Image 1 (cartoon, rainbow, N blue to C red):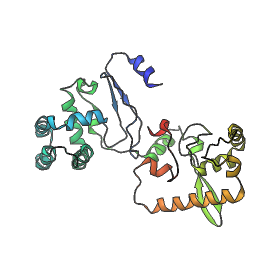
Image 2: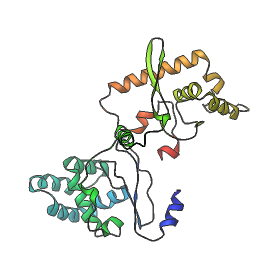
Image 3: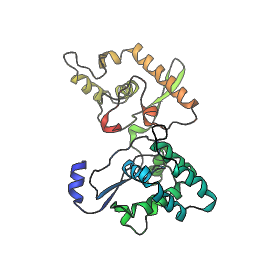
Image 4: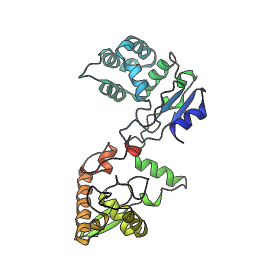
Length: 271
């Protein structure tokens, strides 16, 4: 359902919209501008939308937030929490830094404080007597989502399941990184090769769209992309990126996981 359709559907009723952005993604996603619709992000460490964060952490509300923390924060953490809250926002100490400091101190306490703060606003969550997610500090990444789908018998779409390939004695994997059009011109080169090798009929259809010099890949036609030496190089490049990724302790950005340096990003997936 599109945003406009959703807003029309709920009308003026207070509505909480749960947005399934994972904890390993760094993006805001859907946020309605209608005051009766509040977006909540249950899979992230920070379940609140940025409009809520801006209101709660605004310099004008330092004293109000301090008083709330005095009522919800254990004495052992209170002094540290007050120190963080009392530090005014500046160009060097901005919202995300203050937010992360409070989350690092204690996620559940921060959620309780925000919940109490929202009771003084018109946000839908503030009208509730109890909101269960304030007691949740679980962060769900893509592997957790996959496990949940598998556990409940839903399973993940087959195009997300990695398939092993080998080139020059080296092994790598490929799959689709996200759902969308099979001819998506924002997908990685290695995904085009996956399409060519796993679904040649769809690759052929994609080729038929390329006419009069227009290509999906900034000047490189799909016909050129599947030349044997080009496939070999694309796979070697993919293996190299996968090896570099494996060496990193963590990957928090969706763009880091799915895109190489030369790729653009589709607004439908990364807005």
